[in-house]
Length: 116
Image (cartoon, rainbow, N blue to C red):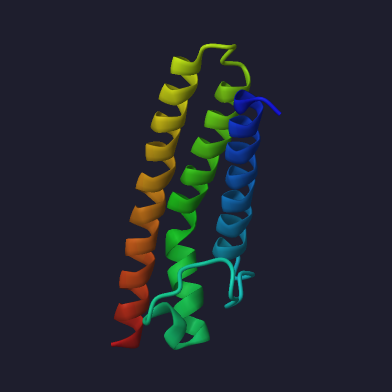
């Protein structure tokens, strides 16, 4: 597999995972588990806190997923230019991490508010 195909596949699969997490969180279908979700002291304090946190974080998480898929598709069509692939990877990474961290912070804050 070429670097371009590997980057594209990684971003698309990560994006799909984030979109599924966002959807499940928004609809209350993301249960506490050892693999996915916001695991902070506040979010793990109760099922209610977990659900509230993931409802609040759902939209930014979906944005991160969409950005990841878009970056993957761009990487797939980038051609053989390694500089373009590096730029796409960097920009896509920032476009994923920024809303994901924002969603995590908002979700944790909502869970802490509920707990207090």
